[in-house]
Length: 330
Ligand SMILES: [Zn+2]
Image 1 (cartoon, rainbow, N blue to C red):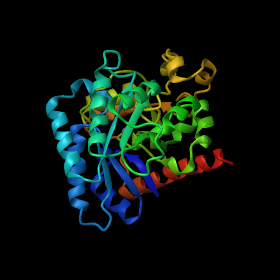
Image 2: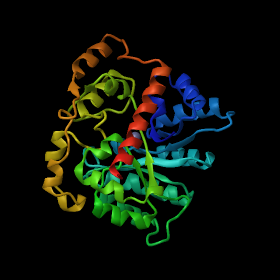
Image 3: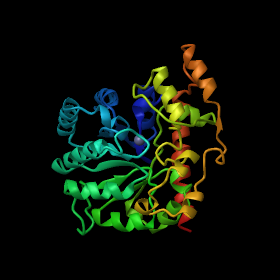
Image 4: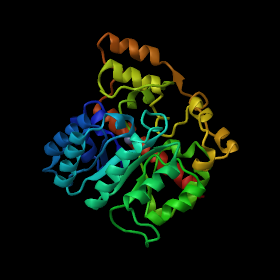
């Protein structure tokens, strides 16, 4: 199994879990999209670097912290990418739900990382919510080649937790793009209809598992707006809970997001497609965010799982994405 996008450092008992995943031949790309996460992944890589098959990582600055990006942060990122020859860049991207979308900050932060990927010839893990065409424009601006025969090696844009439509696919293919599918990729009608049209060799699967992992596993879900970015603190988790950043996180599929989809033309979505999006409530998730917040306030962890349970859960989630893909191609 190959999990193309997993936030390993955000999962419980990450060390034991990493060992277990490697033992089980669960291959993955560990995504680190904030400085604290870079540190954690670098540590994990150190611990497991003697293994026969060192895991692959991606380091980047997520659009949710675009406004906090500094020259120093970019310098550190650059040093890490230079040092780890197999590392990808990212996840980097554009997300209209976060600050810095309107004023161009997210554009600048993404552009910088796209250039880094080009300079070091690395694949670029891309997060995109609500403005796929903007990402393509920025890739062109950064110098990503188009109308080239498919590049069999880096640098390629990777659209993680893919949520685009046919019009976008047609525009993205000449960039040599890869598409990483998540369970959520199949929930939006326009994306579900697009997936079978992607050349099979460019399709990958992911869990995008992060700190919301156990919430999702217990059927917990959330809804609403702002996030802080210091994972592990009650404020952060509360922010995540408020922002709805669980399974529906990067697809932007909360009902408030749907109504916020104003630039239908740019994103290539028609209103009928939007109304075809499944919202959290319909997908069976209930909002018990309150109880998680209470638990945190008391200083206890939310429901924890053993590394064995986590590994099995990851396997079954990844397998269900693969199965959904097989089914949509029938
Ligand atoms: Zn991610």
